[in-house]
Length: 270
Image (cartoon, rainbow, N blue to C red; front, side, top):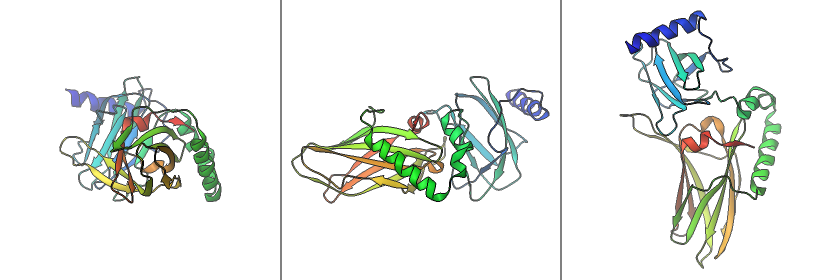
């Protein structure tokens, strides 16, 4: 009965008999079997249905981020219809298409400044303008005195790393960390690595992918009993799971910080 109801809603939406929320994204969403595709919305997802009798695509709502829909393809095949409804009442219909390489794995339907930026000037900027814009925003982030985030951090011996600021624009995610060296020995940064961990539904193993920041401002040495700050920008199109950031030094003090998807979804614009 539930499946029939879902299919009925899909048919109505395609015929234009339902007042669907205005969609600013392409009608077709690419999905592969190698990496996940995520759809992020303003409100929690109440119900979703993959139609056309398709067994090719699978979907799940992330329990830790109920406004995020996770999609994967089991095998190549014909396109299928995706319908979903939000708790707030908005309804969406898309066509799912198998693609070995997904060009846009992060579909952001949130009606905030992120989408406004994506649909206007940011897409028209030249590569040089984007680089300058990214640098200036990273400098703005580095100069912030306040702290947005107070619950994400990690510790190893006398070294504490805390995420202080998390911001976003149409192209990038911006992160600012503070490393507190509470010991007497200087902390000499070897390198900082970024890894995206996509956690699927039941029976789907996590997928880990290394990421490279597009820009960085780092403290190479944090002297004993002192603090240092680290700021980074990451390509927004790559952010579709939990972020694991590992701080390594020439010694043995390694600190790993995990930023959950639900926190990234609530990032403030910069």
